[in-house]
Length: 221
Image (cartoon, rainbow, N blue to C red; front, side, top):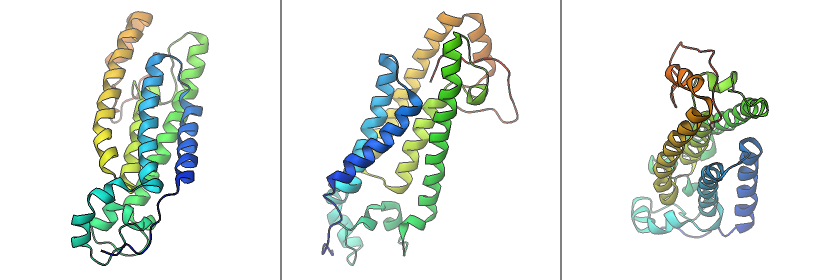
């Protein structure tokens, strides 16, 4: 195993990148109540764990170094490129930033942030009017902002998987599902039949192909 150089220990980059991605998401999500802060806090923990391994200390590489060293004896495991584990494990050559999975991850990241932005814009104006929202992503799914968070986390897993974030991801997805169900109970209490009519024709997370509805979404994320 070649450990001639390390690209880690850059804790300043951990802080800067964490603040950028957490702050950018905060500008769209705007947590209000305890439930909002729980969902946003879970996402933030994922981001910090990710960048701590990406630039700080490569815990996953360290734990797997014996196996990776025997499988890839000529690779500097503590160089930054080796942290792109999908790239390394599939034996790809060249710059991993131009690999298919890395480019696909950029698509998921962009889509996730765009969904957060569009959803918040619709929800913000609906809240000010104390009405159910009508336009945008809420026409297709009941919880577009949660989908946005999941898309962002999945995008990061495509380019930089770690043992911790891989373990966190299904737990956070389950948490968002439970939060969504809890929010729906509150929405039904607040909007009554209007919410039930909306929920009947609008899927919770996965849009129906070729089907649009003009009903209004409640104050959900």
